[in-house]
Image (cartoon, rainbow over all chains, first blue to last red; front, side, top):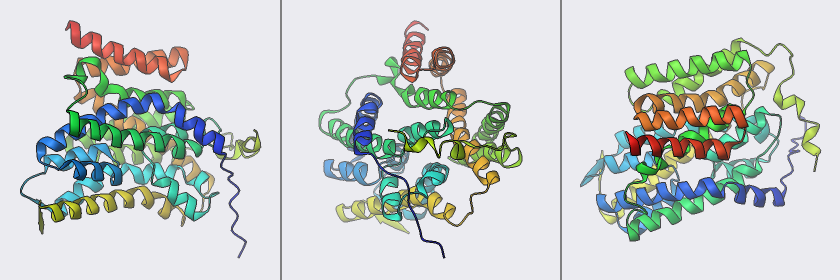
Length: 249
Length: 103
């Protein structure tokens, strides 16, 4: 059996850099956190319970869904199904990082996955498409998002919402706009555009006709199927191209 | 099976939520460690990655109001023109706010 080797070298200054680079977007995460804290308080969660949930679950959409199910008692299996369905996109997000994560020791690999969330993953995935390996953004970016999510929850719990109507300022669209910008900043080829068309249609169909919360996984897998059957003709993928470049600075 | 929302019950519910979410964070990577990375698998992964984004955004645009749609269109156009995320996102937010204010 060949020796396991983990060539990925984390650069501490890059982790710090990514922490500050994702700080602007994490301010919006704070606003969502405040909305969650307020909604949780109104549902009857004690302040420390809301904070504990934000700190340990760290997945906004599923935490809001949990509040929808809140009552004097909660059925466990439906709750597990909803939380799993909403967060199942993490399965695909993690899998997409695997070509980088296999170069990291299992301890660090699963350690940094604790901080995996939409925004920092979108940056890492986009940079990988463009031939750069950036796992530091998962750590640094994830950390700042995690902290602001908790701080935001606290603000909502103790002081109510940060503003009366965040929707009037378009703040509900921050994450959507951010993810779209990341998608468009990645590599675009006829193959990718066909995959997006298929992914978008499949997602829409699943959203309309399948049980709730399945559209992301269905759409992403449908888009991935295009990549599976339609290989890039050059034969060189982003992962191979930047092996050499990974040593730079 | 149901858990009552007493203090202890809530702690249990939070623990279950955290574990289920953790399983989704770890699961994809764990399963991939059994899959040999062929060019075909790598191609699947790369196409799937950006498809995740599209699959999140499209229902958001369809489900949302005119402001949501304006935000995504403005972000898309600015991103294609300038290739810089921050101006693109700002344009999106301004578009959403403007549409919601004036319409």
